[in-house]
Image (spheres, rainbow, N blue to C red):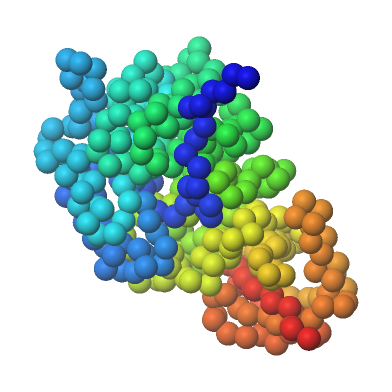
Length: 391
Ligand code: GLA
């Protein structure tokens, strides 16, 4: 029997959604080695590393030219010490290092793409100590996504270093249908922007608000799981939304088991932004080892109720208020029967009592025998963890 020994991605990576930071949302092409080092240092000093953020990823525009042998080099002005030195520094902080390329001939920022150089680029990344590759889809006319991404997957595997493969193909070819064996995460949509609702049109392309991207995840949850996650794009928390909107955006990324890739300037972020990004109870919902993406259970009058089954019989529940007015909740648990056919779980509120914990207020809210009464402010959430009472 023919066995394609290299036709696999690195196993054992992204068993829970990856966590880290990426330069694009806040800095775009305006990056350099000192800036990336400052961010990495701030990730340690401001508690992100200890909260679970692991990867520091440089996005587009780090590249210089290819050398006479075809190997990629770093921009000598922005990264004069070279990528290996930066990677060593990031590793010395107990963090991991990620980089960016593109399956086409050029990146979206017009730098050299990996098309035709996949194996050489993968060798370079391994030599530099890269742990994560975000692989974009600009200038890919005429290429087929599955083949193009499989080529880089194979190149990474051949290079011999475990590198998390983050596919950024914008959902064009429905990667959730074919990429579980190819990448560890795949983008499901075009780019996010700092808006809460709506979109921004740039003529040839559109950037989507956090809530619109959330809506676009409908129907995708069954394709996600340990080692292969839907990626609704990097977070905009701290980049201009209000604190409550940032908290709601973050909560929903936790509920849908999204990669938690912070996209703001960690060294300059407000204390409130850092508090949002590092909330251990929210992160625990995202990182839950059952690895099931949550789902929208109901929607009425701009109030959505999302459920996510967790390990050991727990559930996360999130009341998301998308309205411009606050909402009063009077939620009688035992009138609800939440059935998750995909995860084969039911809440059984009539027979099982759950203790309720508020994941943002960090306090107990009684149990599910009694109706929950609360007010959810506009553009905010009430995120709860339910734990069955042991009989
Ligand atoms: C694309 C990607 C973004 C970012 C830019 C870089 O738009 O979707 O996330 O990587 O390219 O140019």
